[in-house]
Length: 356
Ligand code: NAD
Ligand code: DAU
Image (cartoon, rainbow, N blue to C red; front, top):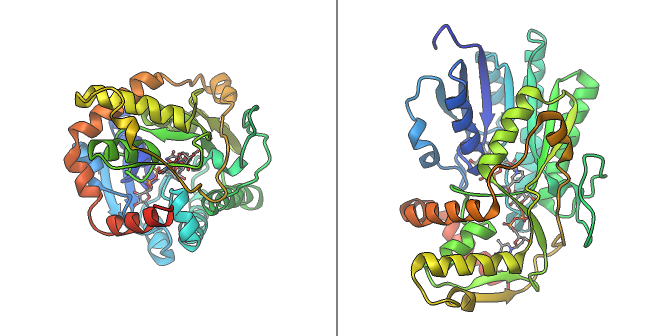
């Protein structure tokens, strides 16, 4: 490693969706840092997401599991990281309903493993910081009005959000009990290139291309607040560098959409892109059995990060959605690569269960 390196940074989950955009941003923006990307390469992690930075001198990929205590303590004993940005997680709500224990293991046990290993580092490095990337789902659900603020009490409704809330609590507790310097951010729904096609937007793009049904859960009147993934990576950069330690920052798109309205917008854009007649994709909409415990509405009050760190989204939803569709249409090979193997089997099981 070059002598000019000022910080050794660990980013976990860097082969996943948000992680890959975060790793790329740090590698490219901070040549004075060395970025270690630690990822177990589960179904959701794909090194194809980072092909463009392979071999760049301030970047290393480390294959490993955050739940492996011996491996993690050895890694932290070998490299004295100056900071950890922790994104590795099981991230899909539907999977958490069928397999909650995997979420407990990765999201809670894995996080605590990293926290324990970090305690050794703070003995020698007062500037060390542990940054947990969390979700707005920890707050539970909103009714038709209101916004999630940093002060909203935690009230998770799914095994996924309960596991993320648990991880957040452990991070805070390590701050209080052991003096670990930390920061947490809770973000709304991300979309953009490289998102695994189990989540609403990439799943529906993929299904429209292949003329497959679009399974809208319940009546579709569920609201999410969408943020373009690269804007999230910018926010992560700012919170890591300038966020006050021991604080939480909410990150959101100021961009609420009811699922059914979003799906109709996507259908219209896809018809245009694919040169199909208007209304073709909408015919694929199929209302299915609802997700158990389905949160009605998420919406973020992102005024704290705006006020303190000057962050706001830079990409409008129209721009972001168009870039996203173009990316998926140009990267059909990526789609078929990531959807082969175990995921296919999982998907058919899940789809069947949703009453199809
Ligand atoms: P993702 O599922 O695309 O990626 C997760 C990554 O973690 C994958 O690369 C996977 O291989 C890796 N991973 C999983 N288990 C691991 C383990 N045991 N050890 C090491 N690596 C492991 O997830 P994402 O959507 O990019 O989300 C990243 C983080 O951001 C998660 O913590 C998630 O809770 C949080 N988040 C996501 C969203 C969203 O809309 N996607 C919004 C807010 C917060
Ligand atoms: O809010 C942040 C969270 O956003 C992140 O913490 C999670 O990691 C991320 O997966 C996402 O969770 P959601 O459950 O909101 O995302 P998902 O894409 O699964 O679903 C979005 C909405 O669309 C939700 O209301 C459920 C609905 N939906 C989803 C799928 C996959 C459907 O109607 N049909 C579907 O097939």
